[in-house]
Amino acid sequence: MYTFSRSEEGQEVQLAALVAISILAGVLVLCFNYSVELLIALLVVEHPVIGFPTSSLPSPSSPSVPPIPSRRSRSQRSRRDRELGGEEEIQPLIARSEKVFVTDSIMGTIRHLRRIGGRTAPWRGFIGAMALAFLDGMVGDFVIPKLQYWIGSEVAGRVLGGTLSLIAVSRLSLTILHIQISHPQPTTWLTRYASTPGTSVLATIPSVTLNGLLALTTLELPFLTYPPRYTPLPYILTPVSTLFLVIPSYLALTRVRSSLLGPHVDPIVPVRRVEGGVSFWKVLAQVPYARLAWFALKGLPVWLAVNGILYGVVAAAYVWVYGADGWVQGASVFGMACLTARFGL
Image (cartoon, rainbow, N blue to C red):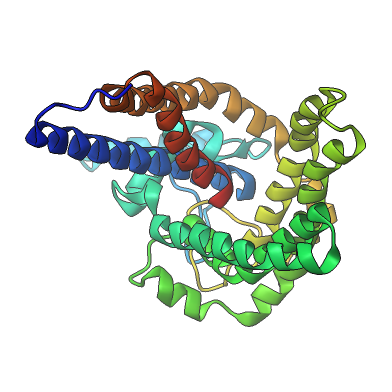
């Protein structure tokens, strides 16, 4: 049952408000989910630093930090400063046995980003990520149907086509990650894309292929082994396999890409750089799963609350215009935005 206003002017106002609310909610969803993806990327790639100030982590271009002074030398220096009429603030250093991580705190990481790149730092690379999601979808829509027709299998076509689409956009994916983890530079994402070395892109192809095949096969296999019409087991196995195989595979790929950051680029957080990239299989065991689990535990309520509120706003707007059926249409629009943010970025 439609609840359009009887006057044409009222209908135009309703539709304009509906479009504006949908666009605004979609942009907010994409921005929020992108900032979460960026924080997770920083957490995954950050390399432990030992014995450095917590408020000023080192970069390749920064001078080395002097050793920790003894208590006697610190007291002598403070006495000398007081005699000269001034006091020098000494930055306390963490004990050499402790590891320092910027990403131990979610809000601390956001403050660190803003201190380095300004208030818009949590959304650096956002436009490039949108282009990446669009291109990945275009390539997949073109390749997957053709492979399904040639191979004669829908599942094999989806797995191989999805992997090929990931390979096709691997250069842009590498560029976006490097933008996310590096200090702001006076260039656009297109310039960074053009200057990304081809050798670095080629070094990521094996890892991208492994990630695509492992992730897509893991998601498809439960539905082949246990048809959903006979048992609900696929709906149980899919979340479990995603948690223990798909997500670790993606995180390992992120670490491989971060290790190829150019030597002339200053990272936001300490990054382990390896010429030619690190091994995909070796890095699977190096992902900080415990810290990621703690991040999810702290951030999941906020993520659910923000997405839930925006979902309610969009659905209410559709109900206002289309009546009770508007809940379904509002949910589909909001779901498309969420899927774009989750799987496209």
